Image 1 (cartoon, rainbow, N blue to C red):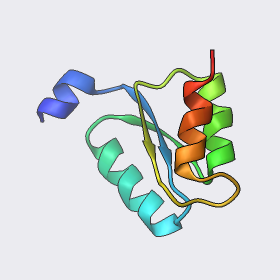
Image 2: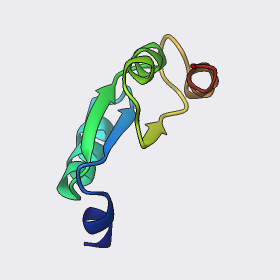
Image 3: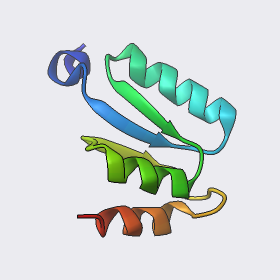
Length: 79
């Protein structure tokens, strides 16, 4: 309840390539009032982070096209 009260409506990015994990995490986060955008790989996460300001990015470490560590580095280098 505290998470929803303090951060309800906050936009976050979830980068996860495994569909079941992505669906479960999204459901849990949205159930707490967060607005969740999804990225299925590291490249998509970098693209979305370049277009939208997120309060939080949850990043899977092992994803196709660009892993989580390299995607995080690319996101941190964005203006």
